[in-house]
Length: 80
Image 1 (cartoon, rainbow, N blue to C red):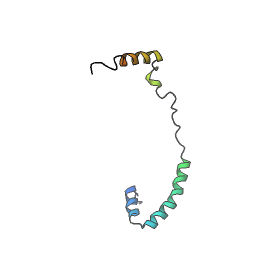
Image 2 (spheres, rainbow, N blue to C red):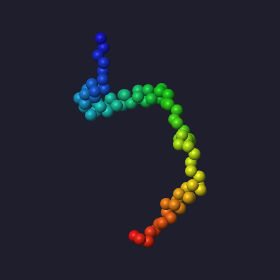
Image 3 (cartoon, helix red, strand yellow):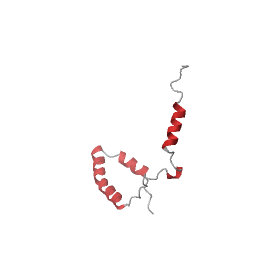
Image 4 (cartoon, one colour):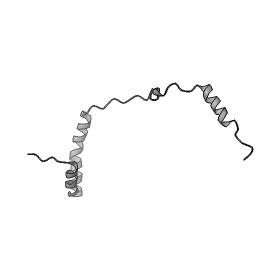
């Protein structure tokens, strides 16, 4: 019967190693991790084009200009 090895168990064992042995462990495990990552197909990334497409059409330049005039129409105020 195999005992399951957990990350916590491995970390506790690694803490007991000397600094030199920790470096050797990293040197030996890094190539294996690199191979695993290269063998795993990456998920296709979602294009940024159309990221906000579900928000509907963008406001027109005229709408933006009208809103800007309304918001900044009384600036600077004389009563301040």
